[in-house]
Length: 474
Image (cartoon, rainbow, N blue to C red):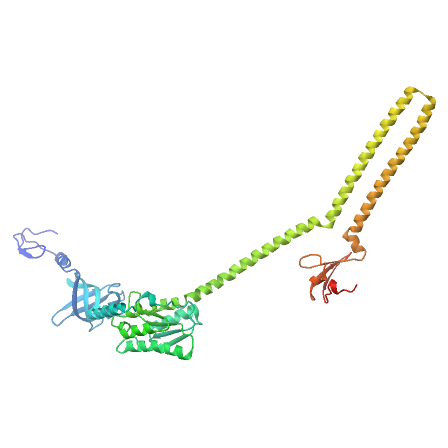
């Protein structure tokens, strides 16, 4: 910004002072310098007053005026600031506000940018809260050792809350969604205002008395309400409520306010839940987990059944392979192969014997020819002819015997073959499911399905009467 060569006043850091050089400031410059001075000198201030002209914009920002008997101050509370006490802001409310002094430049107006809100008298309530907390802690009401576990699967729960509050609707909605079959006993009470604490304590005692007199299962009591200011939640900070919860024979769950809110009832209860919905989720958690386990168990059982069937299928395949190895046809084939080997050996031995005898005869003949004895030659020829005949006869007899032996073996094998047994009128009864041969009637029961193999074709039947071997007359 250009400066004039002369000025009557010069604006310093914290005051105006005369100067021989005159500086002409724009409205924006002056506003910015004033803003710097205010924001530097007035940070984290606390101001008490009464709210008026309270306006909540669609953006979530709140604008209002804080006033006392003589002055007023514009205030802005941006969205997300103020915490749980933000609900205390309304026209006519007496509050204590914390924040920083700043300047709204477009209007040149100083204002309080609010960051913390306390209702008037909050300090006294907080002090009373701390005194009661220390007293009950000294008596051991907060001791974790005296707190009882919450039943995993409550059969019935009692609820102490306002019948028209959002907390009850949240709890019912969660229970209906997660485990709608859970029975609920509602004891309606006021949850704020004078006498509310006495009603809450009486409701807890009433549920305990009803459980003892009726004998009906009541496994847990839920004491709950929605969020609010410290004054709104004060009924749950009263000593009568704390002692009623401590004296309860039924485990008590406390779910008061929002997650950041803590009450005396939370410290005394057997379990503290952050919100009413969280309490309902805790009470139904094991039901939900059980439902998930059952859903997973079904799939797990299906997999195990498939695995078992696969194992049985492998066993059946192994049995089929073993049966194939020991089948009578395999034995017949082995015996036939053995007969072929015997026949081949017989032919080889007969040929070798024939060749050996031929060589011997040829040697004798040569010896006879070399000696040229006529009579011996004739006798030898006769003897040779006789030996040749005997040899041929012996060979023929041996071959005949071997052939007869082979024929007898083939006849025996054919007689032992299952097909020949079936041809003689016999049959084979099998189990249609396993394919195994049934040899003992004692293993059957009436109504058992059977498959009977004949020489030609098969018959399916059902056993109508079973007579074990011990009962069959000789």
